[in-house]
Length: 125
Image 1: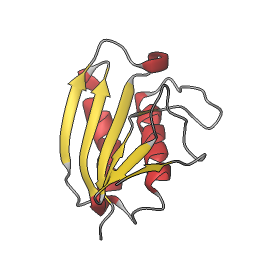
Image 2: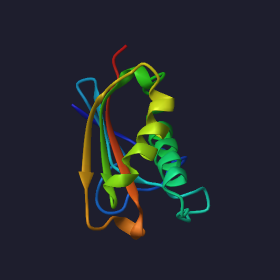
Image 3: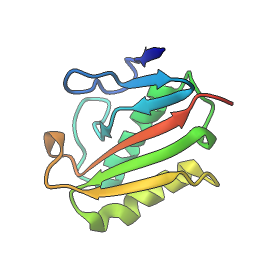
């Protein structure tokens, strides 16, 4: 059975989709761009990455307790040279958890973002 996950504490996703879907103990999160609380996109790749992560954490807040449940992270970048900065932001939160990563270079992202991140998370303890 599928369960849609929604919170108004994270940015709303563009288009006809859910912020996340849970199925059989796995949560699939829609990709997030780094909008700040006012809906603006900071210039800094580091700030955009931090905001992406903040949105993702808010979406799954009630379904898991921390980064140990993260299975997979997909990172979409306008400039692959920015991966080191984004990886640092993620690794500070992930700690010892080392999920599978996919890093994808793209030509464009919504609202001219520099980074977009999605995750797959286990809701099982």
